[in-house]
Length: 336
Image (cartoon, rainbow, N blue to C red; front, side, top):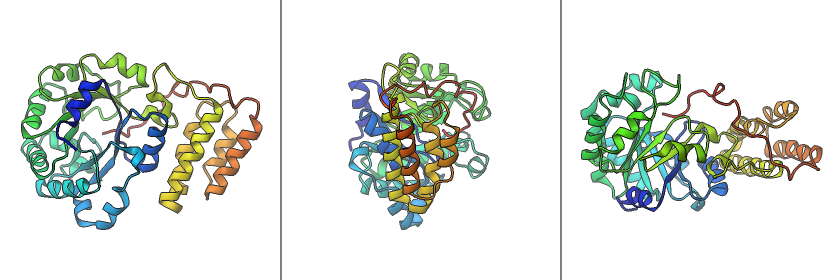
């Protein structure tokens, strides 16, 4: 993939991306999003650069991806430039479209190790990691970070340094490290940054869907949607698209099939949280949700979905309620 990937995508139209989210954006999730919205650029969960280098099993487990996911960007975290460079070579070998560096995760254990948001205050290390990767591979290197530690007063200087080191695109989550995931995202600093650097800049934080992202985009190259996609991959479509109940159940079946096929027992446990989110706005869903949080196999999932299809046989072609209503108060932090 060319280093000009992000510039070419920005020139072609707004960049619409699935945000990297730990515990969510695995291959099955990415395939589901792409099946509904093929124009979306999907990002992976974040993986340890050290882990990819030292554990071939980890690399063989998380880096293979389906052709339908392309172009897929893999996000990694760490603080060792040499490990970043080697991890980048491994990711390139697996056919990724690009590599993203997590410099935004505010989790205490991550920052305490000097990773994630910790790199915002260890600038020399941050720049060295980007430069090592940019020299090691032909893939474009991007960075996802936050407005700053306490405010966005140092954002432009920090990001200029990242670009000078070789970053080809920047994503800014509209909260500071100290905010974690509290309050509303503020994109003001991101708009200012976009006019001050030579690479595409995209915004992230509290985007409820495609139309909301376009309204927030302004002078940016695009936007990421994260938590709004939980149980609602249709959020990437314009016009406030509302799937029918039949479409929703079909996608639930596809998601379960993909996840369980790739992760087996672990997939059976993980699919529970996804399935209940698809039914967030379904009237009278409590009983179905109770069954879905205890599924032990794909057959269990199919049995519950079969019951829904039977119980709502005359309503499968009707649009579902807005799945994003009142979600802001319920969201917890997943995006870095």
